Image (cartoon, rainbow, N blue to C red; front, top):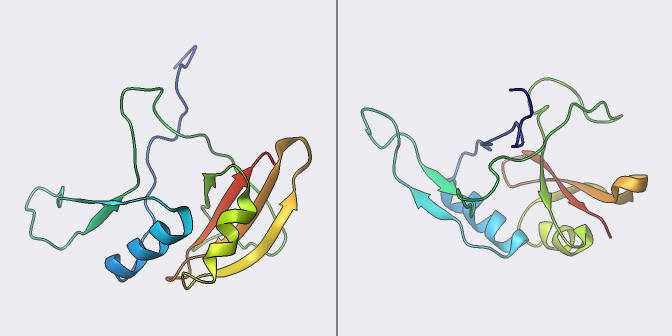
Length: 133
Protein backbone atom coordinates (compact mmCIF):
# COMPACT_ATOMS: atom_id res chain seq x y z
CA UNK A 1 0.00 0.00 0.00
CA UNK A 2 2.99 2.26 -0.35
CA UNK A 3 2.21 5.55 -2.15
CA UNK A 4 -1.53 4.96 -1.78
CA UNK A 5 -3.54 6.93 -4.36
CA UNK A 6 -6.93 6.39 -2.74
CA UNK A 7 -8.66 6.94 0.56
CA UNK A 8 -8.61 3.80 2.73
CA UNK A 9 -12.33 3.71 3.59
CA UNK A 10 -14.21 2.41 0.57
CA UNK A 11 -17.73 1.66 1.80
CA UNK A 12 -19.99 2.29 4.76
CA UNK A 13 -23.25 0.73 5.92
CA UNK A 14 -25.78 2.24 8.30
CA UNK A 15 -28.02 -0.47 9.71
CA UNK A 16 -31.73 0.34 10.01
CA UNK A 17 -35.00 -1.40 10.96
CA UNK A 18 -37.31 0.09 8.30
CA UNK A 19 -35.53 0.63 4.95
CA UNK A 20 -38.31 2.77 3.46
CA UNK A 21 -38.50 5.09 6.49
CA UNK A 22 -34.71 5.42 6.69
CA UNK A 23 -34.46 6.05 2.94
CA UNK A 24 -37.00 8.89 3.19
CA UNK A 25 -35.08 10.37 6.14
CA UNK A 26 -31.71 10.55 4.34
CA UNK A 27 -33.30 11.71 1.09
CA UNK A 28 -35.06 14.54 2.92
CA UNK A 29 -32.06 15.64 5.00
CA UNK A 30 -29.51 15.57 2.18
CA UNK A 31 -31.88 16.37 -0.71
CA UNK A 32 -30.71 13.43 -2.82
CA UNK A 33 -32.14 10.22 -4.23
CA UNK A 34 -31.10 6.83 -2.89
CA UNK A 35 -31.31 3.78 -5.15
CA UNK A 36 -32.55 0.32 -4.26
CA UNK A 37 -29.81 -2.25 -4.66
CA UNK A 38 -30.62 -5.87 -5.40
CA UNK A 39 -29.84 -8.36 -2.61
CA UNK A 40 -26.12 -9.06 -3.16
CA UNK A 41 -26.00 -12.24 -1.06
CA UNK A 42 -25.28 -15.53 -2.79
CA UNK A 43 -28.67 -17.08 -2.01
CA UNK A 44 -30.49 -13.75 -2.65
CA UNK A 45 -33.44 -14.76 -0.48
CA UNK A 46 -34.57 -11.15 -0.09
CA UNK A 47 -33.54 -10.91 3.59
CA UNK A 48 -31.15 -8.06 2.77
CA UNK A 49 -32.55 -4.74 1.60
CA UNK A 50 -30.23 -1.94 0.60
CA UNK A 51 -30.60 1.67 -0.51
CA UNK A 52 -27.38 3.19 -1.81
CA UNK A 53 -26.20 6.76 -1.67
CA UNK A 54 -25.15 8.28 -5.01
CA UNK A 55 -21.68 7.10 -5.99
CA UNK A 56 -19.23 7.19 -8.88
CA UNK A 57 -16.74 4.43 -9.38
CA UNK A 58 -14.55 6.15 -12.01
CA UNK A 59 -13.07 8.85 -9.77
CA UNK A 60 -10.69 8.40 -6.84
CA UNK A 61 -12.41 5.67 -4.77
CA UNK A 62 -13.14 5.74 -1.08
CA UNK A 63 -13.80 8.21 1.68
CA UNK A 64 -11.52 9.39 4.42
CA UNK A 65 -12.03 8.52 8.09
CA UNK A 66 -10.51 8.90 11.57
CA UNK A 67 -10.46 7.55 15.11
CA UNK A 68 -12.08 10.08 17.45
CA UNK A 69 -12.45 10.47 21.21
CA UNK A 70 -15.22 12.93 22.09
CA UNK A 71 -16.94 13.67 25.36
CA UNK A 72 -20.56 12.51 25.29
CA UNK A 73 -19.99 9.94 22.51
CA UNK A 74 -19.38 6.47 23.93
CA UNK A 75 -17.34 3.75 22.27
CA UNK A 76 -18.93 0.41 21.44
CA UNK A 77 -22.34 -0.10 19.92
CA UNK A 78 -22.65 2.80 17.49
CA UNK A 79 -19.07 4.07 17.88
CA UNK A 80 -18.39 4.46 14.16
CA UNK A 81 -19.70 7.76 12.79
CA UNK A 82 -20.11 8.48 9.09
CA UNK A 83 -19.60 12.16 8.22
CA UNK A 84 -21.45 13.50 5.20
CA UNK A 85 -19.88 16.43 3.35
CA UNK A 86 -21.80 19.67 3.00
CA UNK A 87 -21.35 23.25 1.87
CA UNK A 88 -22.79 24.46 5.22
CA UNK A 89 -23.72 21.76 7.74
CA UNK A 90 -26.37 23.98 9.35
CA UNK A 91 -28.52 23.57 6.19
CA UNK A 92 -28.81 19.78 6.48
CA UNK A 93 -28.92 19.99 10.27
CA UNK A 94 -32.06 22.13 9.96
CA UNK A 95 -33.77 19.27 8.08
CA UNK A 96 -32.95 16.53 10.60
CA UNK A 97 -35.79 17.14 13.09
CA UNK A 98 -38.32 17.69 10.29
CA UNK A 99 -37.31 14.30 8.86
CA UNK A 100 -37.77 12.52 12.22
CA UNK A 101 -34.19 12.55 13.55
CA UNK A 102 -32.55 14.44 16.41
CA UNK A 103 -29.71 16.92 16.81
CA UNK A 104 -27.04 15.60 19.20
CA UNK A 105 -24.60 18.55 18.85
CA UNK A 106 -25.49 21.61 16.79
CA UNK A 107 -23.03 23.09 14.31
CA UNK A 108 -19.75 23.78 16.07
CA UNK A 109 -16.31 24.92 15.00
CA UNK A 110 -13.50 22.41 14.74
CA UNK A 111 -10.93 25.13 14.07
CA UNK A 112 -8.92 24.90 10.86
CA UNK A 113 -10.92 21.78 9.92
CA UNK A 114 -14.21 23.65 9.53
CA UNK A 115 -17.48 22.84 11.24
CA UNK A 116 -19.50 19.77 12.20
CA UNK A 117 -22.92 18.74 13.46
CA UNK A 118 -23.77 15.42 15.12
CA UNK A 119 -27.25 14.00 14.57
CA UNK A 120 -29.18 10.75 14.93
CA UNK A 121 -31.43 9.25 12.29
CA UNK A 122 -34.85 7.62 12.70
CA UNK A 123 -33.19 4.41 13.97
CA UNK A 124 -30.97 6.17 16.50
CA UNK A 125 -27.81 5.84 14.36
CA UNK A 126 -25.46 8.76 14.94
CA UNK A 127 -23.96 10.49 11.90
CA UNK A 128 -22.05 13.67 11.32
CA UNK A 129 -22.28 16.50 8.83
CA UNK A 130 -19.06 18.36 7.98
CA UNK A 131 -18.48 21.66 6.18
CA UNK A 132 -15.73 24.21 5.85
CA UNK A 133 -18.16 27.13 6.30
